[in-house]
Image 1 (cartoon, helix red, strand yellow):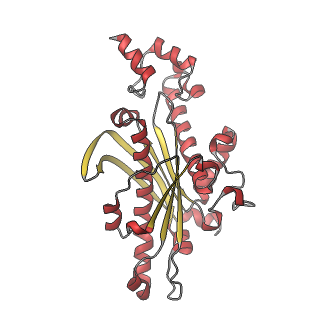
Image 2 (image 1 turned 60 degrees about the horizontal axis):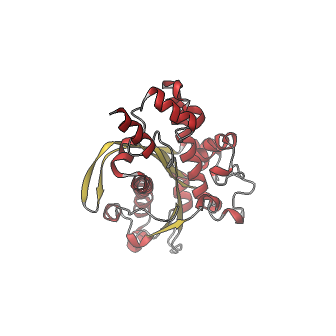
Image 3 (image 1 turned 180 degrees about the vertical axis):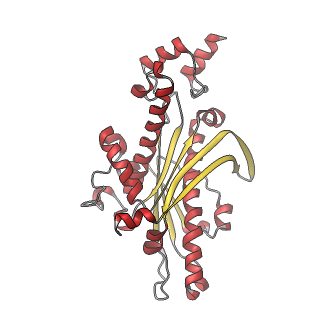
Length: 297
């Protein structure tokens, strides 16, 4: 890759606040806005994936890994992240594409200590070609259930990256190469989702920005964060960003001990809820919280 200082200067921010979502042609007003943040290294994207030579007509494959953190807690958001690593760093972890790179210790975030995750978090942000993190708040989890909230986050992260990529990559291809504009944009996107299912993408929107449905290969990988480098990178972004939100919440409500349990249903957490009540950030649709609310009535 290029000099890290050069990389830093090429990053363009991605900031979105989603209040409505289009599901199968029907708009749904979300109970609370979903915030997405991230960045795209446009220079490296064009260097590694732009088909701007007339003799290079073979399709390129851009791999996007997607993972989540925080499905089980009673408190706070479920965080989802999508990440694109450099082409040479993308692939199966067992093939060691990250050997001798700054991300050499990267694997499933659950297999790493918090200290190692904290080390990797800024490195993934620095060296990733692009990434997006979505925070799906408790109110939306209560509105659509935790599975659908997670799928929504995965969909929004993938679409945000694809839309931003299209903005730069397709425009560059068409404007800088007449032959390329005649054969159309010919990159393929491999979307790797951790888990046993893929979200339903908004293909109508994607086609409007120049990405055909046939160019997208969505794959679900059980324990994918221990298999694919891009999913592992996304797992670090999702996990650490959620932990940071929990530490911030702990500062506001120290009596709940959130820094220790991070929202999971430990005995200490349940005792705090019984003593101090339910916070606005608690997931009211989850049985332990719902039970406390019912007892209060």
